[in-house]
Amino acid sequence: MKGLIASEELKKLQKRMDRLMEDLGLARIESKYLEEMERMRRRLGELMEEAETGRDGEEMIEPLADVQETDGEIIVTMDLPGMDKEDVDIALSSDELSVIAQRKTETGMAEGNFHQRERSYRRFERTISLPAGVKADEAHAKLESGVLKISIPKAVVTTRKRIAID
Image (cartoon, rainbow, N blue to C red; front, side):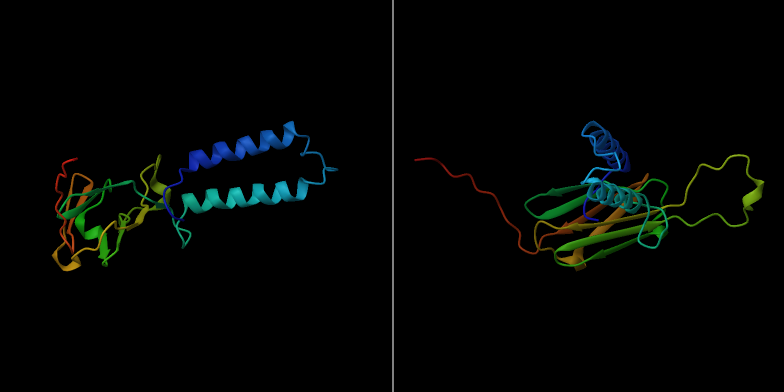
């Protein structure tokens, strides 16, 4: 799935589709469009599941990212709360950046001993197409307070020049 689709937005869309089916009378069994609308509703449900879980069925979050371009580099800032640098894998090609992070589950914690368990061990995964060619071997990253900042020098440095209007 490309980009970020919040599961709350998908839930709102599904409720709107349900309401639309009822308003148009398409929820009745005799409707000739019922089969197509039901297929769309099932597919929307599948999209919601994909947004909430990863490819392997594990829970995954596609973190939000800022991509900033300057004359000499591209700077990507991404929120990875609760992650240590050992938990983050960054892959970079000339036109694409991929970040995968997964916090390890704590060992020695039996399932039945909890009164309440809210902390999750989700996987963060995001692939970003870069706006310009980069020098992958000169990139550097820093993870501080759950914020990952990656600075990637451009392959061709561009300078901006003001042009006077005649």
